[in-house]
Image (cartoon, rainbow, N blue to C red; front, side, top):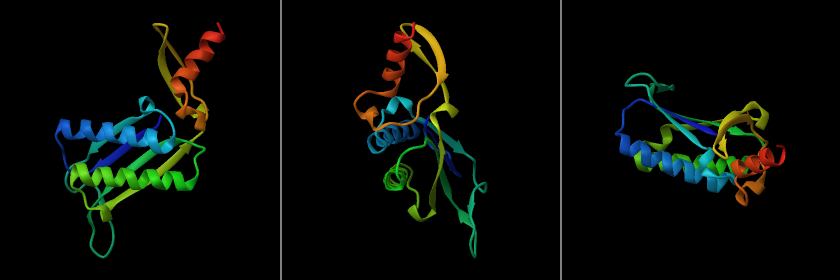
Length: 150
């Protein structure tokens, strides 16, 4: 978590998607005060004619769905949305008028992830977001707590 899912009507080269995924992860970490190692990016290339912005005449559109942990103010989420739209426009040549961003917020305990702790895969529920993640990445906090509970 988070999972940033970009639904689009075209296919793009792997290198373009890899670079955009890196930019999304770095942007997310900076704006949302966490670390990029938590970010998953999904490109859903739906193909021509499979995503439309409705109006007087429907036009092909792009939707970016952001599943995130709850806790950040609206202004922070808006900064992220603007930065992700800008990155998408730059990397994919999209019309910014046809890109929408939707947020779904979750409590930390709605997210399960497996990480390596001292070479052993351990899974568990996440934690709610905290601005302290800019100082200590969430994964490191979880590792320290797991070690202390042994």
